[in-house]
Image (cartoon, rainbow, N blue to C red; front, side, top):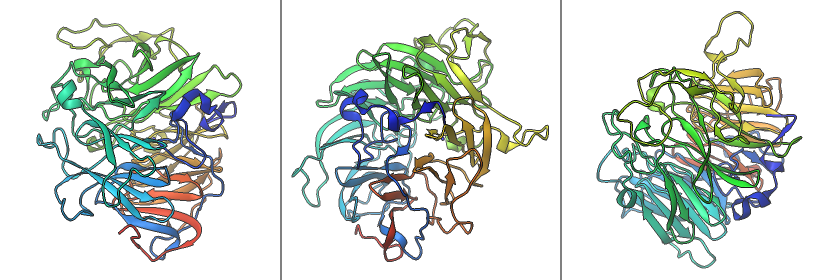
Length: 528
């Protein structure tokens, strides 16, 4: 799944984030910076290519049969998560998660790291889904969550890689064995970092009946020492109120001198933790109090997009939308812009009902299947919300005039616009400051990935493998060819990445590097 007066991550001082900030020629994490606002610093992205003819294709490389782990470009390599259906290692043919690494400029295969499926089966580690997390990197190091609910740190330092061998493991932490986590279906958090810490949302969730939280005392978020893997703090505020799973990823920002880890958790609240102590600074309910799960109460799987106000640098905003597991199908959602300089409960409403008996956890009430009562919150941080808008002024609200369920992250652009993709296939363009809806576009296929901005252009992908490009404009201007020959050939579950003059796109089974003027053999696999 924005502004004339709000500025995106490109203009926020990198020194706020220490070693976590991106270098000019890197895309070292999901969203490029800890703010998770997907803005590329590069100019002149390619807007025309053809994977069938090789036009403007620098290289392509085979992955597995399903690829959800978004490309990360760092240390001259591209890292992507996939499954093991590609059998690059003929000696390892079992189902499992695979982290692959390629040379960023040539596509040469460098290494892969295989993680076997959990023996407990699909309730914890869904068959065939592979490595779903996106990695976090710094020069010489890589951290990620495996499908086995582990947090792993790998050594990428000069001379550490041995040809034909996976990167050396510096430390690994088993969140199931050591913290009692019960991941539901998959562990997919894209790790974020602040100073000497890394943070992971654990995926702790329900059993296969979808009715019981197996381990309500297990943490929902963990802070690790990035160098040793030692646990610094944990929090299990959602407790027994987890609706389903916990698959979102955190953002990190400094607000009023305080570093905050902003984490959407399984009770469908977003929490801001002091990055060093784990103390909750504020919390935000993503649902109306009278919503009922799963019909109208949604989870939150999208990553927060954080933006600084250009006119008032002390003001910071979170853009985020609600949704559900894609397996639950389509439905209506909410998109919010929230002032995150407040503290305490900054939801739209306050809870009226008392907490029901038997609820395990320290957090706000959020019981599936039960409507609640709310009252307006005088401390609400909502700047605007988008649920529906009669865009064509015909007195009716059709599907395109709703914010639908999404798992995508918003992007807020230098032109002052917010672009949000939803799972019903609509790309929404709004004013980032006011929430005014300017236009929607029907991709006619579900969008799993997130929109990315590069040099005044918005790139989006969908489940049909289509890639479309739009102008960063209040008027809908489609820049991609009408014959849709930008199609990648199969479903795309990842977001585009444009860095160092190369556009990286992956569909289910192939990673493409696209560069203007390049030409490769159609569907070539230079990584083999």
